[in-house]
Length: 639
Ligand code: CUK
Ligand code: CUA
Ligand code: CA
Image 1: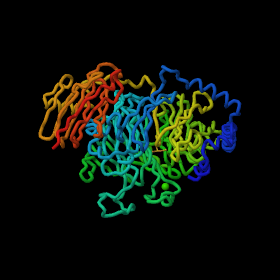
Image 2: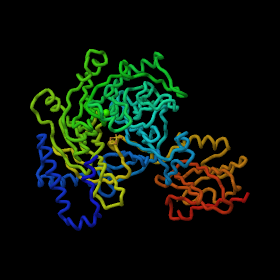
Image 3: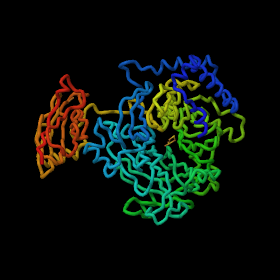
Image 4: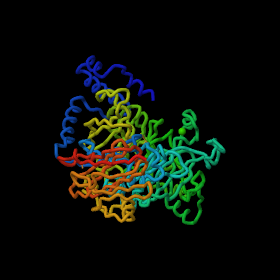
């Protein structure tokens, strides 16, 4: 957007700029921020903080975010790694990165994407080495986090993955059939997360076999997808009009909603902006389940997934027109509203969930009668979050602000009352997308911390060349006013994050030997007659060689093994250390093989011994004073 150009047009190095502006630079930005807020807030009748009260508030908040050495954070944050493909675990409020969970990427430390266990989980799609994740969400029971799983989408290769939060590893992955680009992803909240709802963003012809490329064709459409959260298999797909962007579910278990920005089914920007209104499509989950149960569905191609038609006129869906190219879709934590964020309209649309029964029963004739309010907030509203005290917080991409507003007052204003529902506008740096308040997606929204995920960092950090980090900013919302307290640089666009109280996540200290994560490898070993916890053996089957060994600090069970050139070698290692934190690694030098083996874990990796001679392997995780000596040799006899 053009705003980005104007704020981003600094050709000089940060050092030069620093010199030129001296110490006044931060002050200047601070002042302009306040002036900007003043202008915008005055226009909409909001309150503005003075420079003095702002400085005092910030210093007070800073003491709250200080988590001293050895102290623990109050919240687990789960950050999407964007087109980097991973999930990151971040402590809030310290914003310290605790762990990375590789999902749709290849990770050389843990061996994700390289080990047999990870390839088994990734299935067919292991052939892809990229991913683009946006929306991490934690499973729920009765509208509260149950801490079991975290789900995340892959827009790049149309996948959905599940992470087991007890071990913080991806344990299931599915490619959604017959669609392109899984984007919006949310979970059923009530009675529990039975379904993962996933929007396929792009309209494609069906069948997509090259017989037509016409998006206006009646057989060109996209689908809303439900995946069984436990089995991670497809539950159903719903054909829709237009396209699908973001989604959310309600607190009754009856409805899910999704925004559509391309009701035009256009293929270019001009076309996608043609209509003054696009819509929110609401899905009636019970009716969809009933239709499938009654056998009223079809299937597409090789897929066995039940497909129902939810296009205009269907009993399964309702289309609620909202202005223009809406983006985020957020259920308020009080359960009252689906909120569609206007993007090209300065408004958000509040859809009253209590009116949806009547809409589906045709007692409400005009779908617009479900709109409780359409407050004007500022330029480029993208996503909204909640503090559990009746306030909503919306990102304004173009204004580079977060606006705090009151939902009940917005509804009163919509009815004609003179009330100022805008509470505050806070500058963020810069151009925010998602926004997330602690526990905001659950009925326990606690109004403590807010993360604004800003798309541009510009001059906020030491320069890193043409590619800049994004800037995820921590805002204290526990008081009456929002206070920006921390800048958090992030790589390759997180888009979204989620937070859970630390007591809601329970992790294992060491692996359970019966963990399904490496069960296929245990099965294989059983067939070879191997006791993984004790045996150090080489099994040969033609040119397939399986090397089994243990590891215990500071030694591998085998310090040498022999193979023939051209053999396909599978090294399986079981870490028999019982001590928490003593992870080993295995790297076969010059063979592209690397993996993690944490206490009581079994890991395996397969490579071709294509070069004759001596090849060292070593432990890659510093595990002992003699870690450097934790090595072995593969002797390869020439063919
Ligand atoms: S999307 Cu990126 S800012 Cu993928 Cu949820 Cu809105
Ligand atoms: Cu084992 Cu380092
Ligand atoms: Ca549109």
